[in-house]
Image (cartoon, rainbow, N blue to C red; front, side, top):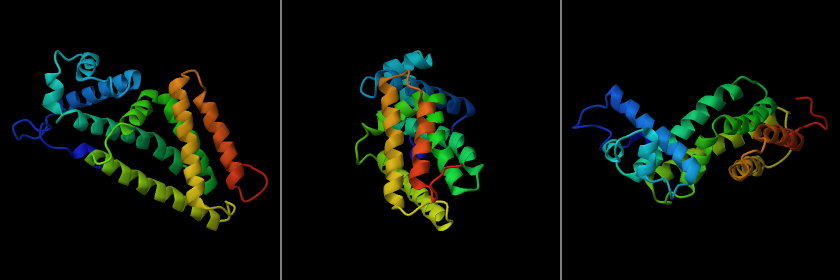
Length: 217
């Protein structure tokens, strides 16, 4: 995803970003994530974000970002970076495809429990970015690549004899839809036990995909 490669005000006077500038950008993105999660995309003004970041004016945001869309793309990029760092080791710790599938499902909702604002902000931004926005196009392409990889993992699990016969594309879409629905529910019901939901979904799809009638995973 190219969301982190915007130009313009990311460089001051043509200079490479300094450590201080990079830190300030990260501070602004973190504040934007919190504000978007709390008040929604439409109400997340530069003023609210500046106040959350402890900035004296919105001019600091305009200095570091080429407008609202640029900042929103960075919010998406940061949320995806956090998700990747959190999820990848959990999944790659397992060799069996069934165990990796369980780790992925449970990990997504453990991630929601650990970083609720990141996922809420991600959902808000993606629901409002214009379809032709470069950041949206790049994100969509990246998500399609991830989906294709996950589908291939299901297919390999079938070839290895761990999974039963099903359409891997349909199954992965169903898994993604189930996880996304828990994310949406958590926004409306903050007290919902998302970790428990993750375990239940993992059990459900374990039964749906298992090559045997029992689940010993």
